[in-house]
Image (cartoon, rainbow, N blue to C red; front, side):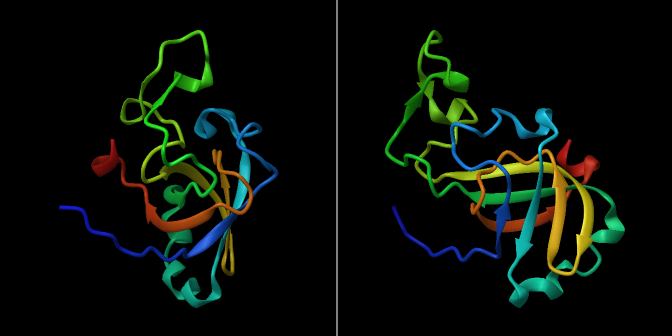
Length: 137
C-alpha cells in the first residue's frame, strides 16, 4: 500500500559545497565543515544539544537527487558495475534522505557548526538527533 506524507524542513545546510559534483563522496572522512541553520521557529528544540558535545546525526532531503534512478555505479566510478541504490550511499534514490553523523563544533543561537558534512549548500534539513554510541554503533 503506497501512501504519501509531507515533510517540512527544520532548516538548511550552509556549505562551501555548491554542487553534487563538488560534494565529497563521504563527508565524515573528508573533514568538511558546514553550518546547519535551523529555522527560528524550531530554535527552542536545540536546547540541551550543546551540552551533549560530540557527534550529532543530521537527516537531510537531497533535493537535487535523481529520484527515478534505481541503479548507480558505486561512488560514481564508471569502471565499477552498477548496483541497486539501496546497496549504496548514493544520493540518487526514490526517497533521497541522507544521514550524516557529524561532529558538533559549536552552537550559536539557531546555527550549528559541524564537521564531516557532505551536503550541498541549501540542502533542506529534516531532523537533528544526538548521536548515542551505545544505540547507534
